[in-house]
Amino acid sequence: MSEEKIHKIREFEPLQAIGIFWTSFGVLILIGILFSKTRIGRMTNGICGGILLVVGLFCYIKGRINKKKRLKNLERE
Image (cartoon, rainbow, N blue to C red; front, side):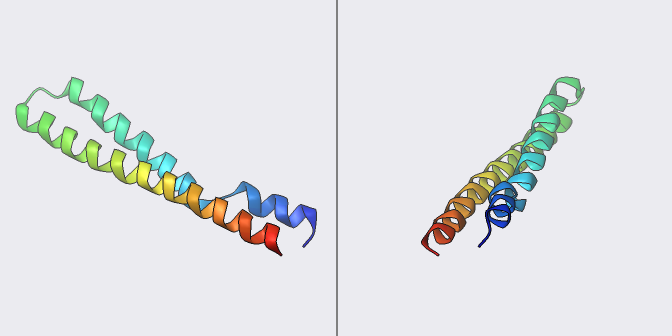
């Protein structure tokens, strides 16, 4: 496999990009707790932001694991 193709494969992992997006979106929603006036609004923002944060971190970590596995398989070939 050419070096250029290996470099392209090494760079991009879609799960990492999705994880970064969901994590940042979750943090923004958690910041929204500060601007909520009602208790139910704060609870909703906290629950939704927490879920998005956890899912985003899981996607990012899973993307890193997939990337490492793919690079190991490329080195074997």
